[in-house]
Length: 282
Image 1 (tube, rainbow, N blue to C red):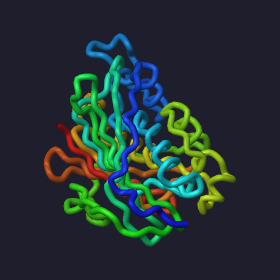
Image 2 (tube, one colour; image 1 turned 135 degrees about the vertical axis):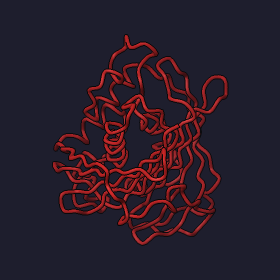
Image 3 (cartoon, rainbow, N blue to C red; image 1 turned 90 degrees about the horizontal axis):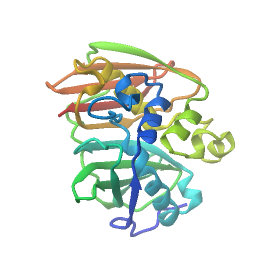
Image 4 (cartoon, helix red, strand yellow; image 1 turned 90 degrees about the vertical axis):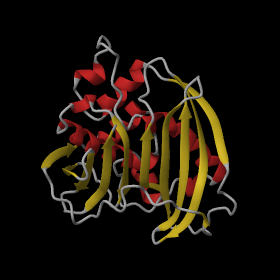
């Protein structure tokens, strides 16, 4: 199997969706969040969406672009590899948001073909709400290099082995978390919930979504932030380096460097690194 040549520059969308309180609350609840800021519709100023909420409204375009540009057999082999999200402003209940997806680069990797896609979301006034560069590796798939893979902003500031943790959280991962997250986030990819599909994609078993792993890590960072979930996050990103099985536990470590930036590392019970991440407050 091989990624089609000429993929870079192709665009899917625009797709317009209504954001409602139910969706914002469900995304947070799917992560096990209980803070009233995520769930209280009487809160002055409205609900606070989880910083990773944009992945929920971007997902329909991800499904469409994979189906149209890659085909089902290749699409099923996709696993999350990198994530770089800029929040221009938080989404809010009542928003009508329009998203487009454009392929930026294709590059060979040891495990398969890496495809980097940008999701740009704007409101009815044309103002940017979020921009995400989402990288997937299609396991066992070949490709010709096209486009340029940009260096993410956290790459120079972060290495896997040099984080000096200021705090550590242990997060239980239930056997059903991927199923709950799929429905609450409205992000359905069968490699996370269907063992037969996961095996066909070359995985040993179903695994937790990369976005869920990152969201849980960000939640841990917010619990240790002075302003808690009210912290205004400007940008965050991650490189995924391992799979999170279910059930299991996720160990998240965090530390600040430079000021205003939190560096994160999440590891599985066998001490394998699941992700290294970076979060910047506005």
